[in-house]
Amino acid sequence: MAHGYYRTTLDIDIFIEASPANADAAYKALAEFGAPLKSLKVMKKDFASEGTVIQIGVDPQRIDIISKIDGVSFDEAYSQVVYKDIDGMKVPVISLEDFLTNKKASNRLKDKADIAVIEHMIKTGTVPKLKKQHKTSNTRKIQ
Image (tube, rainbow, N blue to C red; front, side):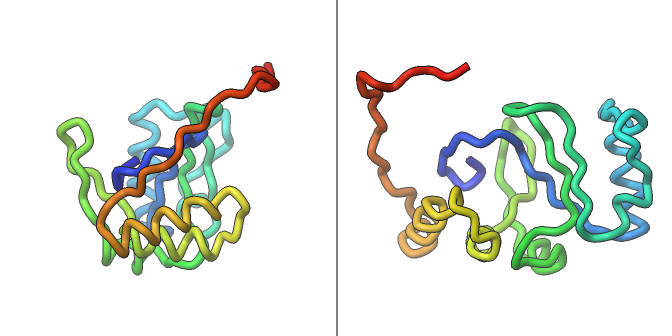
């Protein structure tokens, strides 16, 4: 949603730098936020190396703290970060170009539609109009 494109997701990803100095800051911030670090057995050193994923909460209100994404290093992403105003706060967000690189490198089926939308946004500067999905008579809610 940060770039104006709405797609239902089950979580929010927060990409952090994997370094000893940032590990202390990340751990402290999450502790102050009230994250259940002890019950998740998370230690400061977990944030110092790439590849760490800490999940807080449950879908659809889950926060994923990640220290590595496919196709883009933290330094690359941070050098091209864009700031979006979200409820009066300037929030750093991955650039569309890096987001596209990440989606392509992830090579997940669920990212295929996103790739087409992001490519359109980069090319035209606009969000494409998507067709509304209508329920059919044989659609039912699964619980």
